[in-house]
Length: 363
Image (cartoon, rainbow, N blue to C red; front, side, top):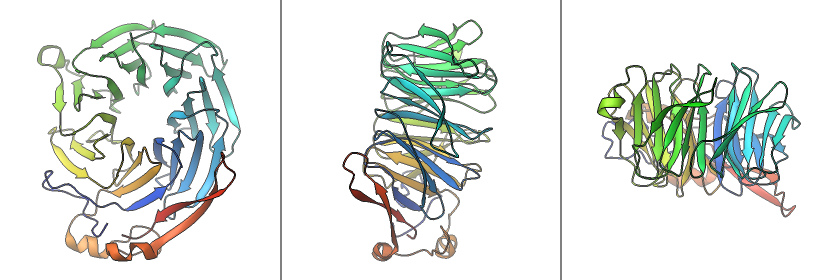
């Protein structure tokens, strides 16, 4: 934490420093999101809560509680600022970010544990991935179930709609990813290139690319626009030293961020397919990594309940010395970090005792 070097011209020399650290939960952070022009961080956790934090000062703004078991995924529906969550309690919930009440809850008592979810704004659909190998689809307006599809022979780990709203990607512990036409809920593609569990997937915002990550430590990038993967296979991005747990595109699709069980955050150029930066600092498995609105910030969350916010644009020595990360803070040496801790009280729902969240506002 002595430096803020976040532009790494030599990926073999990992960036070890973070901009800010938030001990957000007392259990694993399963999802983290930057929203409201990167002014708010949303975190979802295995402690069954969703928390909204001020990105500038780490202030705890709102807690959304209602799930009876761990939350496994959280998606932001940006147009109406609603959150969609999936849980081991076999339910999917749609939340209004302005209050703790849910808009809708879908629950299937006969289904298995739910591991992932997504929202289709175009068709007003909600999808959830299940431990049974199925995925379930509901209509948001009527609340009725549209379909249940047996998509895989093992746990469905992730489900994501494309940005046109007409296709769905699912990936699974059966080592496969699949793309579905949602008009008929039929396969368009069956992708069998990974050698282990396919843990995550993402479409590019222009729908030209599909990205998958796997426990085989690799990312696979499929060019859907020209279909070259059919004859040449996918582009393989392989710099992680452990299972890949998260992969996402920047808003303009120029960058890719990935994270994994090696505790590293990798940033890739989507044009050259080369590793651009590696960020180090987490001490446990990273569960999620996402870009903010304009690629300046990356937010990450790990198994220990820790959330980190990284500045991708602080590059050279002069920038590091003069950079102000958060309101009222200046850069500092590692020795001075302890003087820069702000303690934020929150309630432990299990013990009713007061704990402390820690937000580091200087480096």
